[in-house]
Amino acid sequence: MIEIATLRAYCDGLLRAAEWADYCPNGLQVEGDRPVRRLMTGVTACQALVDAAVAWKADALLVHHGYFWKGEAAPLVGIKGRRVRTLMRAGLSLFAYHLPLDVHPELGNNRRLGEQLGVLAPQPLAGGDDLLWCGRMPTPCAGAALGRSIAEALGRAPVHVVGHDRAIGMLTWCTGAAQGRIEQAALAGADAFLSGEISEQTAHLARELGIDYFAAGHHATERYGVQALGAHLAERFGLVHHYVDIDNPA
Figure 1: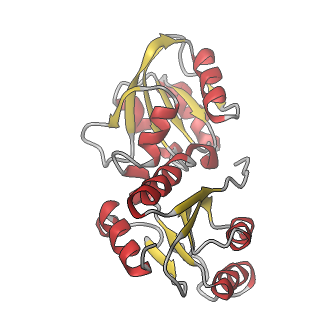
Figure 2 (figure 1 turned 90 degrees about the horizontal axis):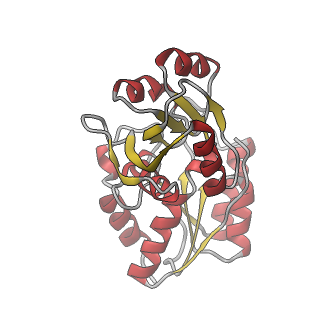
């Protein structure tokens, strides 16, 4: 069991949450009414995940995508109001860590995705901001073969844009909606770049930059950091941890 304030301070420090200018507030977003014994984790605090946390009798819900994003309307009405109302009626705390959970060197989405894909020596790209990662493939392979490996590792087939016909040795990646980093990946000499989403212009850029591109799903690429963080907290503080995957094709 751990007090809410103690858990907040630990997670904020572990993930260096204050160091990131983010699109949302990181840390405790909704304060519950009791210490935390049962911790549920998930990718996005949608209504289905909140309902699952209530049904499981969680004390806290920890996610990658929480609430209060820049540019969205502030009033707690409609869908947002219903989600927050469900949390507060159940006395549930909501913790959310966005960019800090992407970049953490051990527990982060990028590190864990690299391990899931079997990349050798996954690490942030030198000279970057820790959001773009790189590593070597165990054996250089054709783009189609890498696409099959990604599908097997993540449980879904990626969108594959062919940019060249050479073997892929160096892979770069950034989880989530990071397709805009494709030029940075190409300039670094990568043979392929993987992120979660694809935009109309991404296909043209991949072909003109001469880099293979894989869009493996925003949700699919960001499932692993929150699981790793939940498992870490459970071990450190003796919590009961349960990860719930709410399927999302995007």
